[in-house]
Image (cartoon, rainbow, N blue to C red):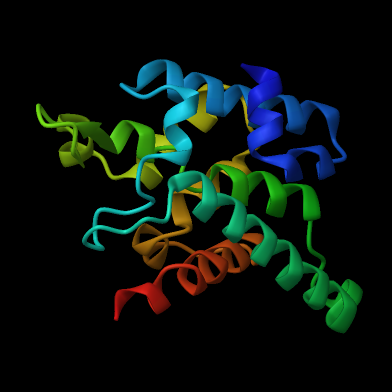
Amino acid sequence: MRNKIVELFPRIKDIKDDDLREKTITCWERSLALSPFDIDDLDKIPFTLLLEETDISLLKHTNAVTNTAIKIAESFIENYGEKKPVNMDWVISGAILHDVGKVLEFERDENGKVVKSYHGKRLRHPVSGGIVASEVGLPLEVVHIIVAHSKEGNFTKRITESWIIHHADFVNFEPFRD
């Protein structure tokens, strides 16, 4: 499964820290092992249940957020340099993992439709993803990015990398709401 995860999320290869790269892969493996979905479902299940009949998959959304976040981070580094340093490895890992909890938040009903799971009714995906990320030993900064990327982050002080993922995620969500 590890090779398939790297194939599906090609920007994983851009994580320079070997340990962080391996734990990013392990986090997806662990989350999928706990979920009713398998790796081939990532390109089939919707990235959100808030949009009716979206054809944008969790995989496509995650890769779009990752690419957007990298471009934001590159611009931030180019324009602000050392005034506000950015850890690109955290940005990439956090973007790839920001919705890792959705495979726990969702399930298929008796008709095969993706719906909110019992787990998802109790814990939203930022919390579930953060728990799994913590369990596999990801740095607290990456756990923070996962937990704080959505509205849950409005109750904490986001780090720079978390702000980048937060906005990259919403840029790849809000335009589809109309």
